[in-house]
Length: 240
Image (cartoon, rainbow, N blue to C red):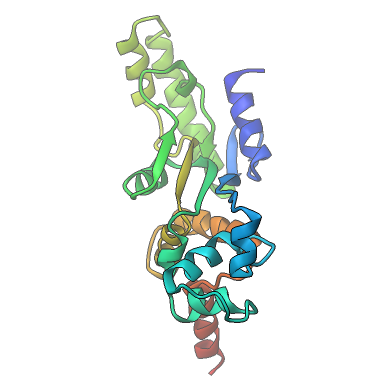
C-alpha cells in the first residue's frame, strides 16, 4: 500500500473515518499506554486496598493521610471528586494516539505541557501526497485546490533535494491530516480536557478532548469531570 493508504488505515484503526481514500471526516483517538501498578500484596493488605484500577490512586491517598482503617467503599471517589485532591493521580500516566487532525489542532496540543511525538511535516516525502481533514460539504473546494496544487507540483518535480521536498510540502493546505502520540498524568488530563471542553476552544480540539475523556472514563469510571456537570447545568438552563 502507499503511504497515504497506510495513513488512512492508521486513522480508521484508531476509530476515525476516511472517505474516498482522501478525506478525513472523523479523527481517531486510541488509548495506547497507561501506568500499571506492581504494589506488593503485603502493602495492599496492610492498607486494605481495592482490587481494581483504583488501587494505585488509593495507595497514594492512604499514604498521604496515613489512613489504614477507614472503609474502602467510596473512599477514593470522595477524595478525587469531592475533595478535589487530584495530586494523588500525578504518578498515573495515560498515553493516546490521535490521528487525522488539522495542523492547527496539533499546534494546540503541542503547546501544552504534554509529552508529544508528532508527525514530521516539512522535509519528508510522506507529506507530499496527503489526506485532508474536511467537512463533507467542503470537499468540492478542496478538490478545486488540489487541481491547483497538481499544476504547481508538475512545475516542481519531486527530487532528492530536501529543499525541493520542503517547498512542495509548503504548498499544501493546513488541513492536511496529521497524527501524534501524547501522554500526561491523569491529574493533568482531568484539568486539560475540562478546560478545553468547558471554555470557548476550537471545535476539533473539543472533539478530541471529548474522545479522550470518554476513554479515561472507561478506564477510571469513578472519576467525575467538571465538564459533565457543566453540560448538565447548561441543559437545565435551556429547559427553564
